[in-house]
Image 1: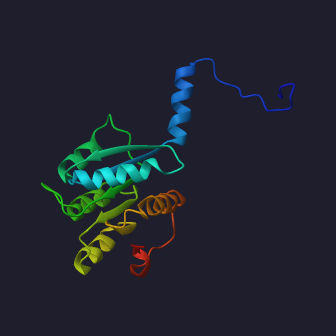
Image 2 (image 1 turned 180 degrees about the vertical axis):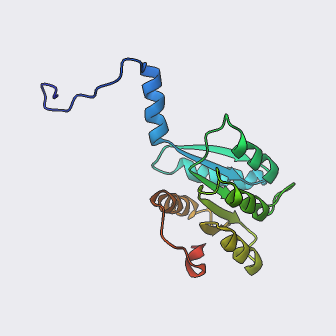
Length: 170
């Protein structure tokens, strides 16, 4: 069926209200991102960078690993499309969280980007072996919007095999 101006007519089931339809469209176009980082300055830089991206992003922030896992396992919370995870956090560090996420049948397919100042080889290898998608080092705030945008695009596309050589995102 076509409208008179040759555009396809959008058929909406009668049981969907305008509010419900608007919410459903938003769900399809808003990327849900979780940042787990205990440093308020880093949260600010990340949030500022996300606001510069040309896409709609709902950002949820948590300040420790225990709170991250509580949030992810809360049935009232929509699972994120991607998680940016710091390593050094109180109560439960990022590597411990990553292990739990990747061992949980409900959470294991969520892409996780390690986002940290802790760039020792041991942390990088542990994050890779536990199933993180990439590792983004903190500190280059001028490039942060572009880096986050590229990582979000990679995560959405469901990239092929990441090797240890291309794990560290630059």
